[in-house]
Image (cartoon, rainbow, N blue to C red; front, side, top):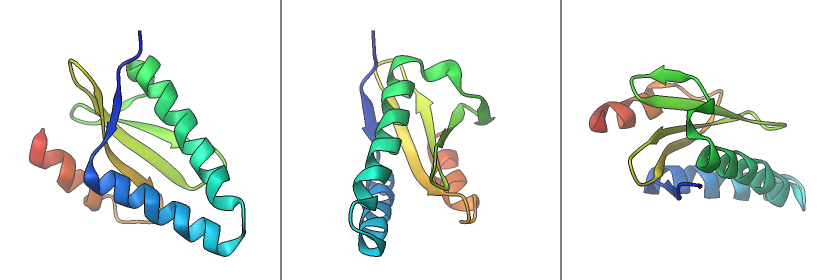
Length: 102
């Protein structure tokens, strides 16, 4: 049984911004990014413990073909996505969010 995967508002903004960025660079690239991220979201909903813990109870899943990772935590009734994170950014951005809750 899969858990619902919920993106926090900050993670949704990151996802939307990245989609828009890629689509503005080349038509069709935004949807390709979305497919790759959605593959990760589906996988973590089905098997949230398959990825390594990286900070407290936060896990990291790598998005293939794009320089992004999904940082998330498994809760009793859902998977909460903390960040859809570009790997060139300062990790403190997602870590601060995780530390606020963890």
